[in-house]
Image (cartoon, rainbow, N blue to C red; front, side, top):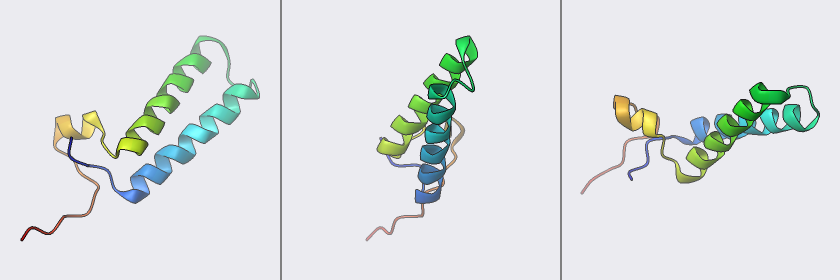
Length: 70
């Protein structure tokens, strides 16, 4: 897997995941919708950790800076 996510994208996803977790555990969002949001937050965390988003790869989109090749 080649990295396709930049640092700003990773930070935004982690912040959104943290916000979803806070909303879920304070019971602001609950039920089925809460579980769906919690799963999306978990996916955001995983994609941020690995710097790879499968949807970006599918559509050929990259937010990481270009790497230099020698």
